[in-house]
Length: 153
Image (cartoon, rainbow, N blue to C red):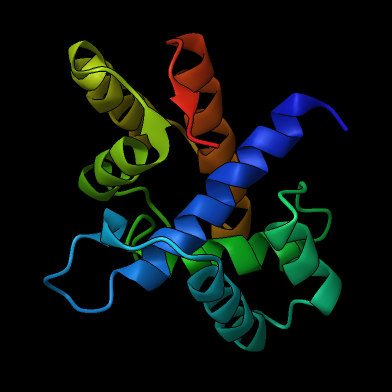
């Protein structure tokens, strides 16, 4: 499987970890990231989206979403973390926090993280929230790669 697919799927797993780690409205989403939290959130979202066990497995194995339900599973994760709002649009503020938590960026690249979030927030996305989540995910990963910012492994 190409590295692009795997790394972009890692982004979604990290997002799942971040969502579950938020705990309360005042907690920082990046304070706690565990596999157990990611699994619980994926299963909560599975019940909400009708995603299959295979879709959850793909998410947890860092594989590309192959079905619409798998994309909806990911959209659910993003919404629970408030990275996607109720209108299916990207939140720059929460995206910046997420990128900082999931990347190996140096302080001098902090401005670039803002630019990545701003760029992806401004792109045109499909009206369908599931497809929008997939489009935003791809944008964020491509922008990070373009700016030389690596994901934590």
